[in-house]
Image 1 (cartoon, rainbow, N blue to C red):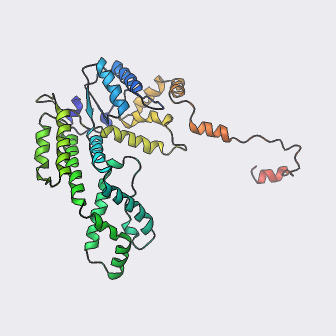
Image 2: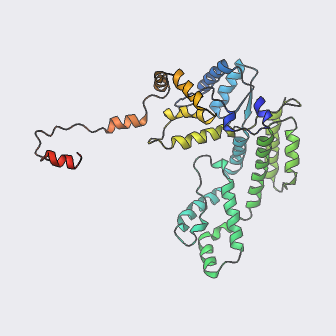
Image 3: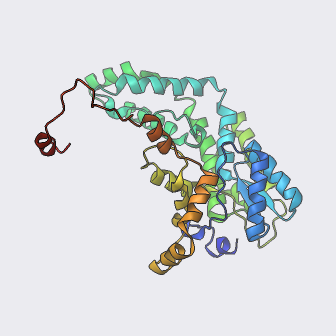
Length: 341
């Protein structure tokens, strides 16, 4: 927390430290609490725990805090923003119609002269975290059609993408919703959670016209969230309000582990601590001399088990066949050498 304040809330991978790596088939409240207890034993009771407050994490953290009352659980601003958007748009018939038409349009225009206008593919995961790409596309597509387009191009556009005009009236409200949430996230990520964060957000968002009931409701929900997360913060205290830096470390790990033949959490997970520090040759040598390979193998066996790739090799291994009594004619020895058999 001291480093967080000293760096004015701008954290990098090198500012992180891996205190424990716990691999479970499915996270439960019990497994979350167990991991937090292990971490607390190593490093002391945490000042703050930042998470997306998924059900298992929320219960596990609450049980842990019941044993360690000094900790504070904060709802990550990025995930909170996504949940708020999901709450307002999940059952919005016009939003569902837009995403469906975008999906169909991608297939319809990809291999046509309009291929350069192809809309982004709706995501299965983290869809509520990335709504800006859909709205940006819709806004730019609407602007493009308003500009002067040759007759042939205009005809094709109207044939394939003429439906975008149906959503022109909804875009301002959707855009204002995203703008408010972006202001909330930006303030919390850049300046942390402070006693005056509610006032700072109010000032930042004052220029957004709350022209609909939904916008007024969203503004209140954001203010309620900020007030809950800043309750009890001292005058000079600054707390972390986003777990983006942790997500970034995991993103780097996924990029690294993506090079492996099978998509799984394997031994590459032990590379995560490498992403969060700067090491010189002396430190690498010390680590290699002080940590036996057997200890690493034991950890992998206890926490990960046999890898998918190893299981696949065993399952698909070829059975040795005895050709002595086979009717297949064998290569002469000289031809075997030439063919490198």
